[in-house]
Length: 586
Image (cartoon, rainbow, N blue to C red; front, side, top):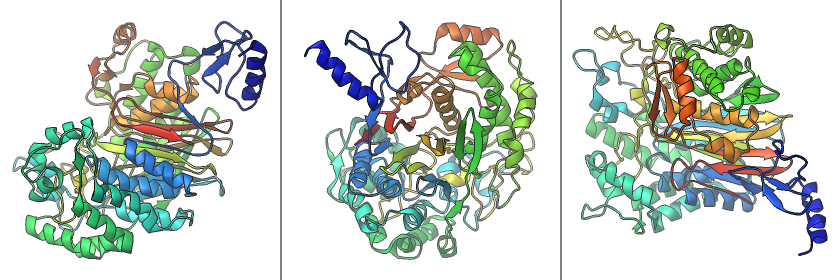
């Protein structure tokens, strides 16, 4: 192809924003990963490149679920329709986190209304469960209680997905059509990948303690499923068919509810018919904050992520992070902001129906300026001197997905079972796992014998209450349109993984693939240590340690699924930190 023709083609492509001509040896960040010199040579500006599409995009932790979501979008469904199909598909293909027996949070941005919604389908504490169910006689937390029947909260996922579809679905695809892919995957089976085969082996000791779980996840002879074999789940297919036929009523009032209640009575669980029938999905106003010309849209409490992320961003805003680039100075300020924000998180975050959470005060920019004044650029603060209460540890095996449709609507959804595979307990005859979210209440708050532990009083266990969660689905708007849709699994590390995606994208103007691949840090106030991912720059670690940061190399943090929208194009990236994730667009 001659050079004249290349230039002619490039002129057309430049008009739609894919290429730009080089004007300097070191081109400034652009909206695209490409650079075309005047000689016609393509030069790639970025080390990591996003998936690029025009009409719609789905980013999830599982290849099959992503394919399901894209198919729904291509058939005319909107982002909510696709989110329903993806949510149920993940319950089949990603059993450690995708779920029917858990709960979560969904953010929805409607381009047509220019309005955002927060859908809270977090689990609730059933009647009859008390803090004493989780404590030893000495007032210490019983380690085994986290996977006991006591730990099961009233699930919210089925109600949440059904309510989201009723209120925000496109109307072009009916409920049965959205569940059909999940039913097919459960009934006909799917090919086991390496990751699923390995994790079923690793978690076998937990899962075989429950006969229904053993039957659901292992062969009839008790052997493990191997990579490449077909995994069928007939009981789960039955459950999904019930939900497809009768909606949420099947789960909370019908045949599935009967099986849940029977198992609770049989094994000493606490969910009764009243708990199921009275579970409510809450559609709330999101919380908002501004960050360097962008609007951050986040979940309100009982999500602790939205408030904590906004508080950290408000502190970041007091410093010229873009001028400092990705440097030891930047990471030092981020670590200090994490300490300050996590101390507040433990003290003040709770279910707002039971505790008056001072959201406006926590995310106030004047207060952030006061907090930032405590940060020295030369010396790390001693986290042990900060006042606050602690929240219990959460399991890292949550999952997140992000979706944008052809109309510009966006969904950011994070849901979980708690631990990997939750309690490890399947309701007999249903094929679905139960969460273990009740153990994430601060069960030692105010309990005699536990006075030496600074447990969050705001998050104490009460019937009907929703436990605080680190789940942090986020939508960022720019010029009143969706700009960034992101979220992550990872327990308390969710918050810091997500805030770094936002900062990388806005402060450092990285494309979404680069923002995703950047090494991450994590500080959660106590214990006073700054965790960094393996492969973190050693010179940077040395400079952080000179400032007094107690640096520790640790495992990977989070698994973000993100979509960025710029100049009419969708740019997506699935985190490489966990296998089998996939972003697709069309």
